[in-house]
Length: 158
Image (cartoon, rainbow, N blue to C red):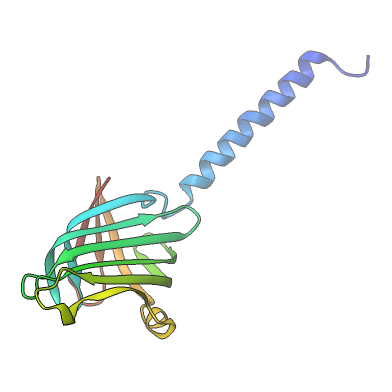
């Protein structure tokens, strides 16, 4: 017999353990690994506009894609605004870059009917203009996003 069964089994086990270790190490090398998942906030913040009670949800995926859902009601107009964005993101330990690929907005239930908008997709130029970079940080199950306007957006892990 050219090979010993015990030696073959031992080599296979060592290879399996090495593959598991390499797999674990590669996850540790991903600076965004703690970001992946779904994060929720009960405040909606728009740069230059302000903050509103509502819901804002970010979903970050390991494949570098994201989905952002916003839902709030304007106290002034009574309008319910629902938005969503999808796109790609990348980053490091402190900075995220977003490249939106599309999104939709719907404005409904307004006090005056003229303010209502059926669901519409964002035009390509608006999507392209929405690319941005923001600082980010984690403390336990709390994610803080701080864009250039300096207004923190705080999310809790779902």
